[in-house]
Length: 113
Length: 115
Picture 1 (cartoon, one colour):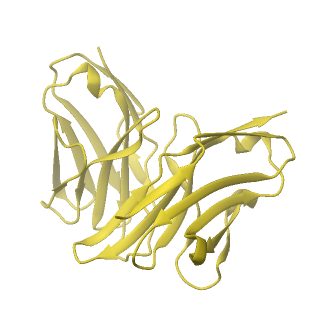
Picture 2: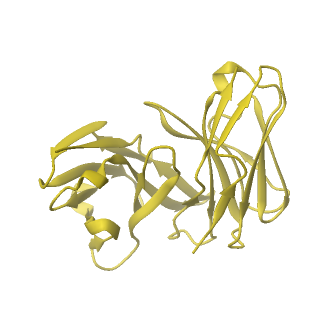
């Protein structure tokens, strides 16, 4: 089974802090994704990566950056956290074949005070 | 344009009743289709998927979905709802285009099961 591990289930930070969300997968998948999930808005793609050191902006990249130094790890960085970044953050991975599904971690519920 | 539409953001059924969650997609190429379930404060878990072959797909927890190309639909059903089915359900489609794989999620349907 694919295992996608997000470093924290719940996180509370203060406005202006630099926040790191970590995601690690054990399936050697090339593709990794960061989403945020808000009530009524579904899942919105922030960034994705299709290889080490490669990244692509998703639909809402503003205020975020990412890092993928190793294949198994994909980090989401909030450069200067703001209250409107309070949300549920989900990491996902996917193999290279089109017919493969995405596999999700348990999510990080982030609160910015 | 390629997208996924889930009709009904909230669905309520009685325990033991039929569950029907609707999903329509728009695509100019054959899609691969997925249903996911999300329990409170958890990530998304794959329920079932359609890639090729049989159009009626069975998944976990007694759910199934039928791919109907003529209707561009992939509705999720379960004959008899359990209390444990209360969750958020997401339909998703993945397509291969000249820019690579594109993955789209619907906005989700929240299922409530009434005792």
